[in-house]
Length: 306
Image (cartoon, rainbow, N blue to C red):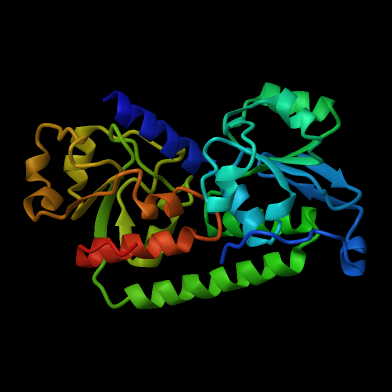
């Protein structure tokens, strides 16, 4: 159970608030210079001003690290968290702590101009960085619009607004294509088990997006992020599909679950944390819709296409 709990915490921390390429010179063009000074408000409602595009960037958010590389800013990223594993180039960048607790001294030592964090990053770390004169932008999303805003904001902050708009436009088109593709299937009720019967609600971008793949999220209407449902509630809701974010070996089936349609009809699917699809759907970045589409295929056809 210790392993399940650790994986669950990673997933929940990522979901609750959490075409890639490396490189990019990052030099300001005349058009970029015209964008500054500029003011932006992050996910937590903090307003900050940027007088110029940052040249040295640190990221404690796996989602933001993906966004930065997608914007062509890989060469300007000087530090990332231990959880920033994509793209592969990010793995060789100096580590500056975990997503929820950055190494403030190391970040200052790296002379970062801006630090991108997730909503779970400790407030004392954020305060210490602010006191050192470093802007800290918190990224998070409750739905697709929130994901789009995060990408747009990172583009504005880094002087890559045009590329950010291109990514967002591509994602919006992809979302419409996914919705059309899965409209041919009958709607299925689904329970997403993040671990220990915690799930994804309307306060989480994953839980809020299942309608795109013609799936009814039985945990949707909870008013808080990552609700934990009782076994009795899940049995009562009787989902047709049960998605478990762990391996089958790690899963402990609660008493009474054999009467749930998903278990009776063998529509229980296990997605271990190491699976590439998990990497996509637990990060509010450019690849999220790829992961969502893979979930849709699993729900409606029983096959997971990475």
